[in-house]
Length: 101
Picture 1 (tube, rainbow, N blue to C red):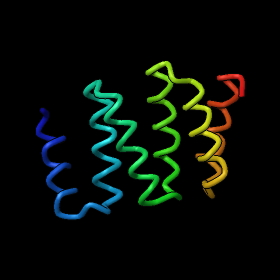
Picture 2: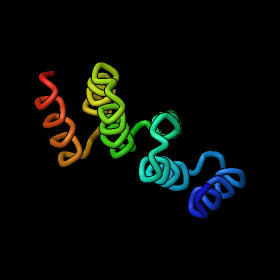
Picture 3: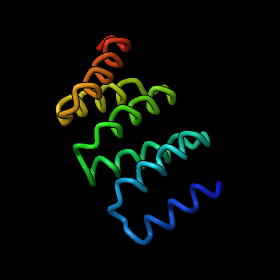
Picture 4: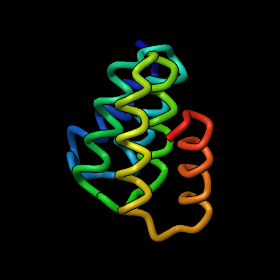
């Protein structure tokens, strides 16, 4: 287990609602190839902070890497509905367009 993952897990143990730590953990899981754990962590970010648009986008990207295209589409659509950030919305729409909606 990487030191970064351990550090982020310790931060979450201290503050389970920390969006910063949970999102960082998700990204570290992606970087280490632990994609199912990454998806779970992205979903936990969204449950804690439904407006955290990066979790929808990167969660969708992770699902795509796993070959779970229907779940990726659903997550992008959720992100489009929840996000107020124009850049994030454009990224999610582009991802949906590539997947053929």
